[in-house]
Image (cartoon, one colour):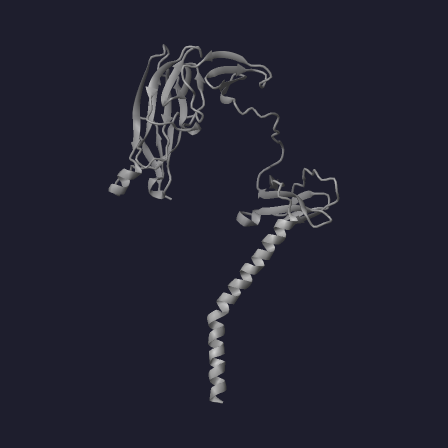
Length: 328
């Protein structure tokens, strides 16, 4: 009897010891089966379409299938009819607001797929359509019904959505891909070759300032103070080099074109911060330099880690800054 009890005890211990392994094997086997089944039943050439769906407003899916299909929704909050009409039953957030809608043919193959998000605003009242791809055109600005763009260093404009174009000039520099062109009563501003250029007539361009590195489209803005008749232009820097300290520059531009540029912010580099963790002015890079067009306040945002993330603003055109928040 004791031998039987001893054997049973060892069997139980062995089961407990290996049960987690057995469960893991079953889990991965089931997952592998599902992945294989999904791969076999789905056409790899299908790219899912993304749709925002307003609660309570039916939406007809754009269907490009000629053969009969059965529609499925993986979310009970999003209903899809046999004709491909969507209806969000209730407002949700997070994962509950996400639905995958699939059209399956008679052979069990997924032939069309939609990723749907339930939203609390009116959606699908308009749409964007791709008319033409223009890969070599660097669009710089839209101003007074005119689009300004570059092909290499050649500056063009069009007033009929690229049906025709007129060359303005050949720039003495190559415009930075990530920067727009600023156009206002005080002239035209462009970034290129880590420099700020200014032109009154779009033909003759003059260097007015220099930078250490380029930024991006969210780091070039201006504000015109009608009381002082001055234009304030701001530009920031962006890179992923841990040794770089990133700066914000300001130009004060007068009506006659004279201007004064200077550095108004300087964020310590990651390398400096790692040497001295008490440096709270560090940032991996700047994310945004922009102006509130109603107040003229200048806003600056940095990142990436919590200790480097800050939102600052200036009410005096960059003479001084206040921290709105920092951290997570």
